[in-house]
Amino acid sequence: MQSDSIELSLLSIFSFLSFFTFFTIQKISNKIFSGSLSDDDFNKPQAFHSDNIPRSGGLAAIISFLIFIFLNNILFSHLYLDYLVLGTGLFLIGFLEDIKIKLSPKVRLILMTIFLFGCIKIFSIQIYGIDLLFLNKILSLKIFYLFFVVLCFLFIINGSNLIDGFNGLLAFHLILINSVLLYINISNEFLPISIFITAQIITLMVFLLFNFPSAKIFMGDGGAYLFGTFTALNVIETNNLNPNISSFFYCILLFYLFFEVFFSFFRKLKQKKSPVKPDSEHLHMLSYKFLSFGKLDRNYNHINALYINLVYCTLVFPSIFVKESGVLCKFWFFTLIIIYILVYYRLNSFVKKKIDI
Image 1 (spheres, rainbow, N blue to C red):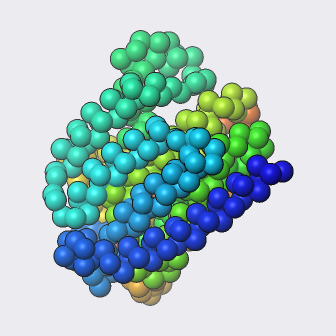
Image 2 (image 1 turned 180 degrees about the horizontal axis):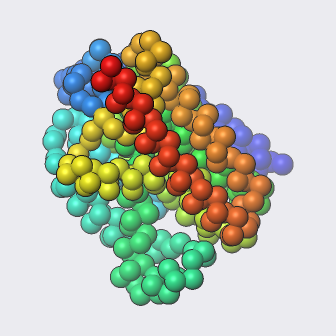
């Protein structure tokens, strides 16, 4: 009981400190960085704002997490070193873009890949119980295993950055994913990981106070990389601690982040575009265009964020009841692929017809 009281006190204090951090960073970031943090590119594919809004949400988030890790280490001697190193490193790679130090998408991808390879090797990050026999045999070779784990991180991190185009879209989505992970870990009394996932959810909720429905601050690439990294680590840790749950359940849970990257890559190749450059043909963009034909103003882009996450909950959350069945989870996952492709091309066809008219 005393331990529970200390944990609640820690999270309560952290909530206040996180809010104070976001409030302070939002007020002073443009002054400190001489305006270089302002998102003043109103013509990029996913621009839905008309004011100079600082992309400093990631900076506030990393400071908040450093505070939490410091306090948690004092109280419980738990440093979360893998989270600290991976999160900070990948945040910095994304933050370069936020302060307008331009790196090409290919250079950023190479930097991320090299950094991930090194960290996965150093921290011996492993994914247990992959629910495909042929894949387990391939992954018995160390080089293929390392490549597979790096690929998992890249999908989740880049997926997080990819969908971070509407007020609240990514934040709400990661809250939903991490709430399920929290439920699983609390149910089995895995407290250290549960406390840190709770801290992440609190940070995302605080961020939403400054980003939703109208934005005073953006998460930025640094923030998307940071939260994507933490979510990847949360999933791996939860998977390893709960061997009774099918690994395909986590594929369902991460479906939108993973498949948006996978599908977009091959879609762009087919269209003879660079697969690493942004465009305006992602699912969330088509969804927004679909809604906007009903005279939805660009200043209300947050409605699209709610709409997409509501559909996600409807399609994904019922799978919680079959999470221990590998067969049903595989069936669910491949059904989601079919639904995504059908919806995408239906929306794309609708949007093109409306534009032609």
